[in-house]
Length: 239
Image (tube, rainbow, N blue to C red; front, side, top):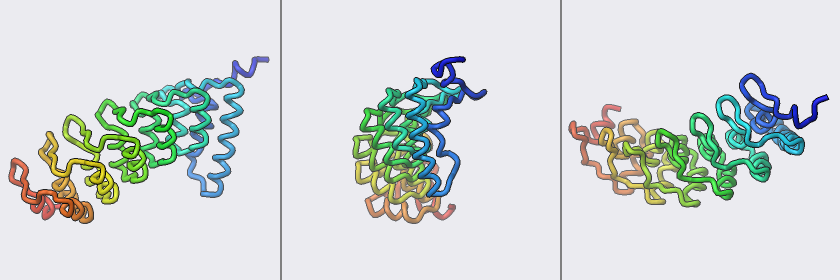
């Protein structure tokens, strides 16, 4: 008979091992009560697989790793167990998502705080320039934005195009997220290099009343225009 160590990392056709499946087992959308039971069971399963020498660094065919899968579903307990087992905190999958990016995108503030406490890079950007803070802001994950900015993530940092965390937040109308970014120094009137948009223009063009009011309250310049003459008022009227 084969030894346990020879079989514990056997993978599916997609390259998913038992450890990966257990780490990401909260994907199923269970009800609150059953989710709690599933979380408890997955922690025990992960511990058992690690005792059997499951490879914590093994990747699926898409580059997914157990830590990223745990961060994606928001399992703080499994994330902690995997970190203690030596999982690489900043390892990225084929789409260049790190565990921190995955936690940010899905709004898991507790997981994000745990990863940051274990030296996750809060400024590590994907190939498209998106930082964890941009990802959290775009999704309106205010608790995650607070965790990142408290840790020192730069609210002023923008992509080469000028796309910033503040623009990410106001584009989708997340006023509380935008307020927090402004409180942490996000530039209020800085224009994007691509399109010459200000945060106020972006918010007005999307018809977001609360974020537009917030930006005006903080001193956004209402009369600034794009090179084609479009002002925030014209953009709002056309929204």
